[in-house]
Amino acid sequence: MNDLEDGRPVRVRIAPSPTGNCHVGTARNALYNLLYARQRGGAFVLRIDDTDVKRSTEESERGVLEGLRWLGLQWDEGPDIGGAFGPYRQSERQELYHAAVQTLLERGRAYYCFCSPDELADERRRARAEGRPYQYSGKCRYLSPAQVQERLRAGERATVRLTIEPGPMTYVDMVQGPIEQDAALLGDPIILRPNGMPTYNLATVVNEQVMRITHVLRSAEHIANTFAQLQLYGALGYEPPAFAHFGLLLNPDRSKISKRTGAVFIGEFRDMGYTPEAMVNHLALSGWSPGTEQEIFSLDDLIDSFSLERCSKSNAIYDRNKLEWLNGYYIRQLDVAELTRRVVPFLERAGLLASPPSDAAGMAWLTRIVALEQERLKTLADAPASLEFFFREPDPGACLELLRANRFARKHSPAELGAALASALAALRGIEADGWSAEHLEQVLDAETARLGWKRAELLMPLRIAVSGREATPPLFDTLACLGQPATLRRLAAVVGMLE
Image (cartoon, rainbow, N blue to C red; front, side, top):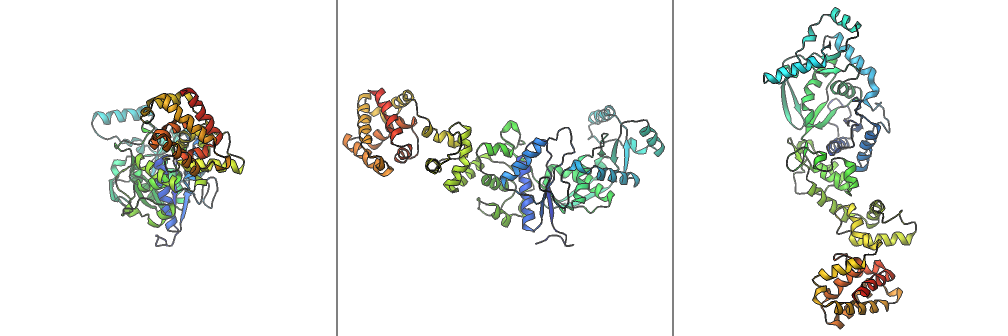
């Protein structure tokens, strides 16, 4: 499928600035670009917009690539894999930007501006005092060629500005619909800085042209740039791409997503234990609606279902509670062996594992205990706290304090409870090693409960506390089976000793 009547292949791009790791807004836009390209058999291009040399870093570029790659949003061309339309970093096309500026100067669509930062600050102050929006006065536009050359030869600091052609402008946005702007309100934007680096608008227009980008799908904050860019396309004789602008991602209180309100970078969500499947699903629904009640979407489902027509014109709420719900769903759907593989780094980080088990028996045991908690995990990062008691023996004193407060344990005196646990300990010691299974443990402990004439929870809850140091665990018999006979007996004996 191809949207272009002239037969050109669809080419879209994501163009993050490497001034921070991969923001959730960048990831959402990357996802929408990928879906659009895949639906139409087109190319999804990753370009690094690094013309802000002071803030751009290699570390941030790695963070962007790692974040998108972790989500499974694989690009067809980019700085790491190359392609037919490279280079894929804006900073590596300097000669093209300067050639474009020279063309604009020769056509009378650009001019040198020698205004100092102090002069521009004065203009802004006057605009504020008069209650009007600021735009550059354009006074350098009227310098004669001789004056310009004289000042350049004198080494004066200069920028280059685009000469805006006044008049009404309109374009049809693929998401927002028709958008109008009075070009006279744009001012004459700077397109080349004194250090020779292009500004965002010029670099973007030149790159879209030479990389043959057909559709620019980005956040609504760039609508203001679109009209200046359209003027640049016209002045340079380029055919502009189609534009689509998505609403921004906001917190539930309508504030902008920022570090102040929690995680904002994809790497942070990864480290917090969210799965890439949940992140992709949630990002897709943060600004796009399928028009049905369906909430669970794989990447393949999204490729089939996504459409720009169902993208919201307004800003979207990034609902972290919904993300957590989706994450729990995807964790429950994982094959337990795959879930265990994903949990291992979190166990290592918590100091519960030095490294992944090197033998089949060790991995099998780890998989068994992860399976016990699979239904309860909301994030992968919950696993260490949930599974810690399998790796570390609880403090008997802390267990005793918990028993004193527990409503089931308090139904009997300490002496009665100690005697009951001692009897259970003796019964558990009598189990043959090859009979230590959840089914046999249930039979033995149910027999002890019946002998005591107690309700089941009155024995099993104190037993759970004694061996785990907590009141909530996976099903007790499965827990004891995984914990193993030596550890179970040792832990229970320590608490019985303190009760006695």
